[in-house]
Length: 134
Image (cartoon, rainbow, N blue to C red; front, side):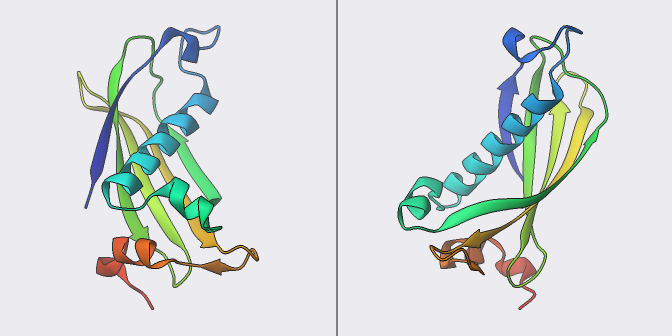
């Protein structure tokens, strides 16, 4: 299953070179992951209130091309089960007008309970039923 979120580059997200600053891409990726979770019945904020924290443990990012102000693009999100306790989101940023891939990322995470121990809550388990490795 692949999920998409639309964006448009804002001028203040760009550096002196007139391109999107590399750190801003992480914001795009995170926002898309949060939207994906919410759309699939996982309330990130509610989990945090329950002392369940979803955490990123690794990010792999390949920058292909640069976005510039006013570019319209989307971020795709595909969940992948890695192990019993780890999951990944394969993400791609694509410029809309020419379908150019601008960035590819793999963000690996887990959930931790209030004691800091890794586990996957039931809400997250259902996202990965098709790729269950347990």
